[in-house]
Image 1: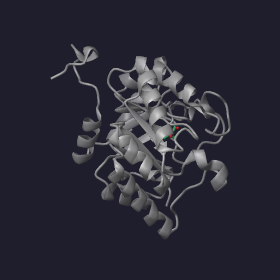
Image 2: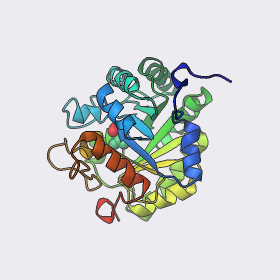
Image 3: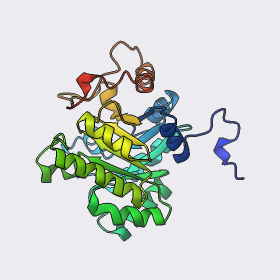
Length: 276
Ligand code: KIV
């Protein structure tokens, strides 16, 4: 049996894809957050977050763009490498940016770069039926994959804005079926964004792999939010599912611990954070 160098002497082993799957099976909520640099990553890790995502939301919250579209693979590698240095416990996932996975070959090449140079342990891509073969190709090469379904922010210009998805019964059923096909192709996690509670619940029941929600209601296996929304750094209008955990807490660490507690005891999301 191998012992990874960084794990020697650690009280608690790092979270792995197996830990996350066991958490689903045992009904233990999975607490996830985004991070973009080493200092915040260390805080998020100290708060006992299970999974950290270097999201292409960095295009908006770090770079100041209106969408995630301008983010590049080099941006993700740079931020992922920094975040990896701040983590000891949490599982690191990094986004595949817009147009970085248009073919299986391109997806494999870029995911290898993000894992080798960025230190990510899993890549996330925005997916539907058109990406099933790409997910299968990555899985065949042992690349761990998170499939992002529901609202896909990289498609914002095609769908005409950041809107709740799956409100029509046909669209909802198609979304659940598509998530199942992505799982069957080898996705290890499904991330579900901005859908009515019922779609969150049905997807979670239909899948064996963990379903992490953002604006997907309380009946998913875990929750994720953008770090700067949780810490109330984001200015202006935030989506309905966002909760400011900084309020009532005197440090960023205390706010992040409150978020993790609220996910674990299922007090977040409350009805006011959900879509029907
Ligand atoms: O890019 C990102 O931060 C994300 C989250 C919103 C889940 O995909």
